[in-house]
Length: 369
Length: 135
Image 1 (tube, helix red, strand yellow):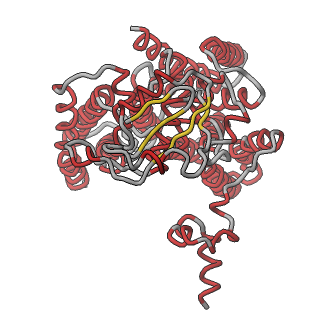
Image 2: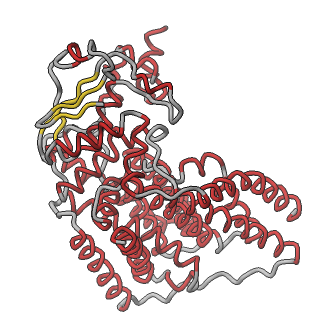
Image 3: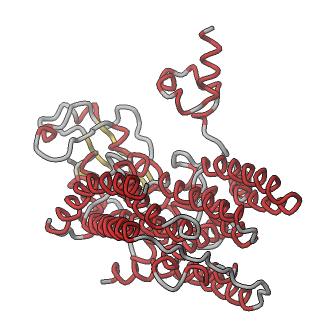
């Protein structure tokens, strides 16, 4: 019972925080009052609370149920107060396009398939178990990191030091530890459900964002195709952060693309949150986020001239990683993995892993000539 | 245009959906799991759950322990079930994850394994700390 109540309370925090942030940006009214708003609020709240808790942990915040609730309450209060004093008018949805009977049938069939797929995913996640054989890195370091945060009630440099890939930022372990705290124990079997729920929220959020410009007969079957694609499905419940990173980068890309069509800074604000979370979830997120920021900045300058400079705030997202490097440096921990050091390329085991580092590939290519 | 794109997309989704629905249905009608079992069972891929739960019962929280693995493949690896990926590294990771926040320390080379692996029935793994559990 404690587990179910704790899990429900944990999962309720995300849409509440996300809705408050969308309200602050003046975007909440753009997505109706139904499923679209819920999905986008959940994904936004997960990203915002995750980034806030990660930064809080670096600053010494203890991780307990009450500290998480306090951070969430502070975010909600700040966003609601800020939203009430906002001067800008709420955005207006593009007028819906009247579809033909065929469009409506394609939309309905796509929505039915998408709904069944999401339901099946959630049932599988609730009734299934986590799989360390396919998610070996979860056994190796992602779950141990979450367990150390849970047991130490925060980031303990001494415990962090002995786990592999200490250079990876703490958002994913922190959010996993939040689930452990709310459910009252180290329960890795609950993480597949949390991940499947986040995946479902991403699909709905993507629909909410696409719905502004893409006809539903196209967007809904396409999202159903994504949701049931073998690779997406196989990684939907994974306790590792790779698919979550893809959600965050994709959401940031969609919101940035909307800004290129609707020049409201609020869209950039939403993208910054997704990019900050992406950067704090895995180092690869910094590269993807920075690349997206540069592309959107270039496109913004081309489209809006001087006003396009505003896209530069997207760099705040990947910039969040600087706090993590400061924390690592403060505690004397290294900020990168020796796996990617070209000097390590002579080690025999690395000769089988050249695909993981362009630098290694280049250095070995140079040797062979 | 709508008919071609929509039809092809829906046809592809429907093909994938069959396996997705099958997985969901199989989960729905399958036996339920106690949460503690669901937490521990997946580690069967790498270590004996009897040894893991036994180690957690005897090694106090925050104590230090070490994992020593022998070289003989466990005889139960031929039994039905998930394929055991028994090697000293994954064995160590499984114990470390399950026994947190106790501290895993490196064992002296050959400390226990060299002696124990000659015992009849030794499954190639041992945990020792303040207490001992054996697979």
